[in-house]
Amino acid sequence: MLSHPDHVKLAGIVEHLQAVPYDVTRHQLYSAAELYEGYDPDNDESFAQCYDSCVYNHFLATGKTTDSVEESLARSLHDNGIHTGLKTFLRRYEPNRYIGIMGGHALKRTDTMFRLIAHMSKRLTELGFYMLSGGGPGAMEATHLGAWMAGRNGADLDDALAMLSSSPTFNDKGWLSSAFHVMKQYPQSRYISLGIPTWLYGHEPSTPFATHIAKFFENSIREDTILTIAYGGIIYTPGSAGTMQEIFQDAVQNHYLSFGFSSPMIFFGKDFWTEQIPIFPLLKELTHAGMYKNLILSITDDPEEVISQLMSFRREREKR
Image 1 (cartoon, rainbow, N blue to C red):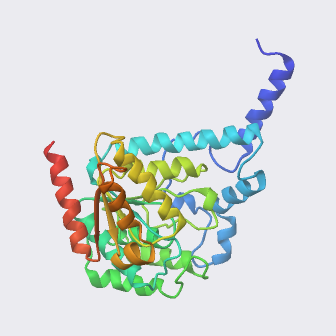
Image 2 (image 1 turned 45 degrees about the vertical axis):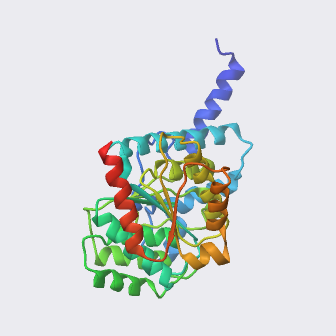
Image 3 (image 1 turned 90 degrees about the horizontal axis):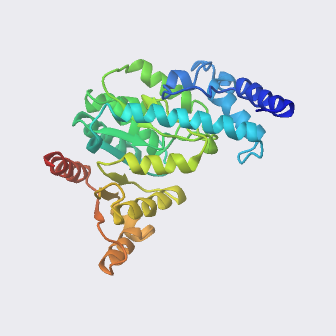
């Protein structure tokens, strides 16, 4: 039986759960419209008042690693609800068709690699794959832009890229508004993609091109989720610390066959992955030495080769 002090404490927790700027009872993924509720693409200053900004500001004010029991509980309830919504979403589609693209958040919209990722993602989406990423800017945005533009001709995607080029990075004014203007110019409701961002990196805005957004407070949950559900394989494009972490975390999952099988690890960009950051030859050497097993490794500069490998793996998996 609860004592009076316990009742008071419980009442305080309930009051906190009701006061936070996010819904602790939510059990579905976000859409871009929900995440950016209150934002007007024609008024960039309105970003400061949108839902995503309010949650991020609260996150910073209460501490990224909070000591508050009430706040920890609120965040855990929110993330559990998003995880529940994600499981519901994933049950709708064939798991072997989820493809992850990992890469740097700093990749500019004007970079050749950004264009290559977008066109590759567009083709994969049209072939029946479901694209997923960390849901932020750079290579992640290129992934979801390509999925959003699926079903249209390449010239339309190039036009969308031109519309985005005036704000090359997420630090540039107009980065978010130009994305919304592309979506207005090229509306679609046929193709889906999944972005999985986090408020831990809330200074990087989530790309609205992702049709479904699983935004978490806990980055560790988010990172593991991205790598876990990319059953169809992961394409690694040039990146830095975060991408390096994902490579070795994915290698561990594949080594131990954590989910019953190994998925392709495709490194896109030969010079980057063999000369600038020579992770690919390291993985090959460690595999040859027996320190890694079950890795399905490849490296290429050709998007068509990436697509061919993923299609081949999908056909093999669908036979089983």
